[in-house]
Amino acid sequence: MRYDFDEIIDRKGTNAMSVEGFRQYIFHDDRIQFPYKDDEFVRMWVADMEFATPDVVRNAIKERVDRGIFGYTKIFDPEYYNAFVKWTRGHYGWNFEKEWLVTSPGIIPALFELVGYICERCEKVLIMTPSYAYFKHASDFHGRGLVCSNLKNDAGYYMMDFDDLRKKAADGETKLCIFCNPHNPTGRVWTKEELETFGQICVENDLWIVSDEIHCDLLRTGKKHIPLAKLFPSYSKLVTCMAPSKTFNLAGLMFSNIIIPDKGLRDTWKARHYDFENPLSIATAQAAYAHGEEWLRQLKMYLDENFAFVESYLKEHLPEAEFRVSEATYLAWVNVGAYLKGGKDDAFLPLLFAEKAGVLLEGGDMFVANSKGYIRLNLACPRATVKTGLERIRAYLSLG
Ligand code: LCS
Image (cartoon, rainbow, N blue to C red):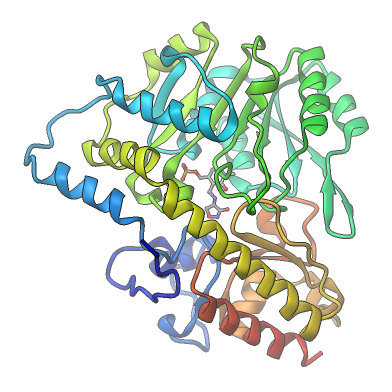
């Protein structure tokens, strides 16, 4: 079957974050007004997709709905583990014990819990910047100190700064690193060598690692994801987070996998975590891993083409924008600093582009640090939407 990613799907009236939630999430202001009506915006911000989840997944939900009863539910049946581990083995050559797997309504809530379970009051959390802001929020929520290590940026190609990481990991108060593999927002797929060096630094300093691998299924065709845990099979202070939510556009069903090899931490999790599950979410996740392969293959091809389109558009129409096709994620990370003159470079970029271009995007300070001049565009939408978004951005930036 050929899936249609060009279809424009109306999300109005579905309580979609993307449609209804941007004032609060981006601008922290429910009443903020813009020169555009809400449905005139091109939405390229929150990291979910404008594509329908595959038929095989929707059918599984319908079948579960038709069983009629939605009483208290947990994963008892080994079939969920079997489907997920078959996926990780097939895609990444990595598997893990069944008892290591726990589930969470999301990776954000899991990060919040894990920081609290792992770090004492005086201990610090290390992250790499630019960063998905919830890594910082998870640390702030518990009042833990935050240590940032800026990624190095060579003409849009980001690398870890191992000297800096070594220094920061060696601080006796640093206890945990929340690591993004592959990386949001830069889209880097870390190489085996990079992962080995990073992991070794953590091991030498006895750091806990939470490896957030939520974007691991969404690589450009031909790229390979390596779970950090695959390289450090005997290091038990390493938690891996994966989910069907980004891959299959299921974030609203609130279901993610947390793999905790350490028995002590797992016991803490089990003692404190409220662990009932939504029956529709289990059916969905299981069907996605068991039957979603072909849809994902086609999705990745469509995303590859969206990235190629953005690359050639920027080259032709905004040649001073710095951009490299992301190795992973559906998020384009674009440096438009060269076009931001006369005080605009200090502006909050999402506000600037919402007001002046009618495009909702994330950028600048939303990524904690080391992100000045950058906008992030969500390309998981029909090509026609990507095109309109770029045209509006170009029209605004070329005004000078
Ligand atoms: N971890 C990373 C690295 C993410 O990018 C996201 C979503 C999450 C966790 C959220 O996980 P959940 O709680 O849904 O399982 N990223 C978003 C972003 O960059 N903008 O909007 C959402």
